[in-house]
Image (cartoon, rainbow, N blue to C red; front, side, top):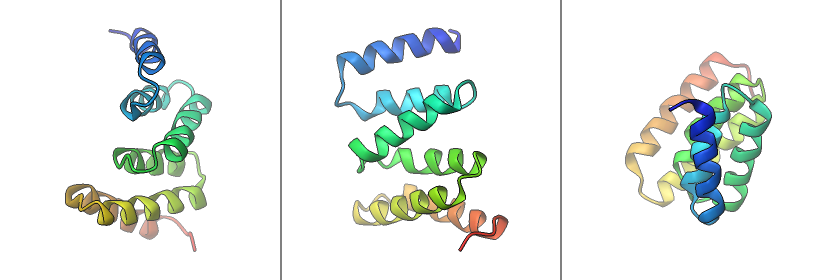
Length: 110
């Protein structure tokens, strides 16, 4: 299935299930490499409307690092780490902490 077919299918799912964060998450991932503006839109929507959806944080932070929005990426990593700890999501916490530490090592962000 091509990216555009997957996107069409995901848009349909998102319309049918507007409260399901996975559909928005999948759209953000699909758009990352073909339309950064739309990826930004879906990550922003997820972070605002589905704040507790932990999978968003790792990929959203990495996306914003690649977009050179380093302050935003740092905030997303920190929020994801906090929420992962609060929700006892140990695997996500470990992944986010490792990615955040690498980010701090590689980028000059205060």
